[in-house]
Length: 337
Ligand code: NAD
Ligand code: TYD
Image (cartoon, rainbow, N blue to C red; front, side, top):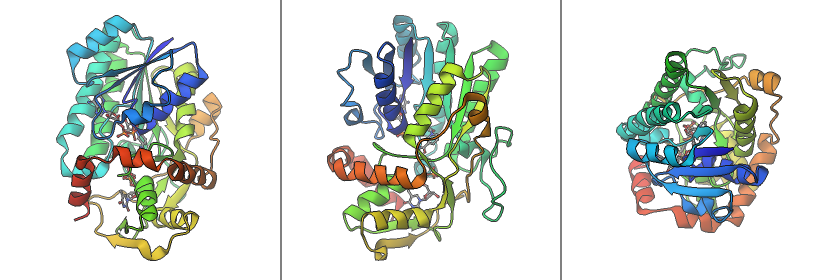
C-alpha cells in the first residue's frame, strides 16, 4: 500500500508518519509538505532515511505539482493533514486558511478522483461543531451535531468537510472524515497552549492565559489520534464521519497548573491576558461511534499523557530551539502585545 500523508512535517502528520513507518514496514509512506512556519524537517529526522519513507516539498494548492505526484506515485490512500491550524493566526489573517484548508482540499480530492485513489481521508477537527456551554456537562459533540463555526480556522475546516461530503455524493469520492479533539504530545509547535506553557515555564517566562482560564478543551494524546486514523483508513466505512476523543475535559487553568506542578515551577508565572476574539467556551467529544464500530480505545489518559509529553520536552529542548524562527517571534509579539 502506498499512502500520501500531506502535512507530514507538522505536529500530528509527523507523529503519524513515525507511527506508520514503524508499524507497517511493507507500506510506502510519502509526505507532501510545503514546510510553512509550522512544518519542520527536524520532526522527520528520525525516519527520513527509512527505506519505506519519502519526503516531497510542495504545496497542496499547486495543482500541477499535485497531479504530477499522483501520476508518478499511484497512491492507494491519501490522508490530508496539511492545514493552517492555529486559531489566533486565523484571526490575524484568515486568507491563507481559506486557500490551504479549502482550495488545497479541493485539489487533493480532484487528484484522488483523477488517479483512482481507493480512500481519501480528511483530517478534520471538533471545532467544526462550534462550542458547548460551560454549565451543560451532559452535552457532547456527536457526528450528528450541526456544523456551527466560530473562527476563520474552524469555518475553513468546516467548508472543507462540506466539500468532501459533496465530492462523495456527487462524484463518488471514496472518502472518510475524522473530527478529533485537541491533541498534545511530542513535536507540538510551541504556539499552542500546552507546548507554549511548557516552554515558557522552563524559561521562567510568563504563562499567558486568555480571559479567566475557564474555557474547556477535551485533550487527546497525539498517539491515540494516530491509532484512530490507522483504524479508520483500514476499517472505517466509506462516506462516514468519525469523532475522536478520550473524555479528558480540562479547563485551561487546570492544564496550566498541572504543567507548573509537574515542572515544579511557581503559579506566580501565570499571567491573565486579554481574551481571544470569539473564544469557544467548551469542546467535548462523544467517541461512541469509533469505539463501538471500530473498537478504538485510547492508550493515554490526561495524567499519563501530559507527564510523557513533559518528559519529551525536557529531553528535546534542542528541537524547540531549532524550530523557533524569526516568524515565530513576530507572531508572538503581535499576539501577546
Ligand atoms: P500543524 O500546523 O502542526 O501542521 C500543519 C502542516 O501542514 C505543516 O507541516 C505545514 O508545513 C503543512 N502545510 C500547511 N500548509 C500547507 C500547504 N498549503 N501545502 C502543503 N503543506 C502545508 O498542524 P497539526 O496540529 O499537525 O494539525 C494537522 C491536522 O489536524 C490539521 O488539518 C488540523 O486541522 C487537524 N487537527 C488538529 C488538532 C490539534 O489539536 N492540533 C485537532 C484536531 C484536528
Ligand atoms: P490552542 O492550543 O490554541 O487550541 P484551540 O484554540 O484550537 O483549542 O488553545 C487551547 C486553549 O487555550 C484555548 O481555549 C485558548 C487557550 N490559550 C490560552 O489561554 N493562552 C494561550 O497563549 C494560547 C495559545 C491558548
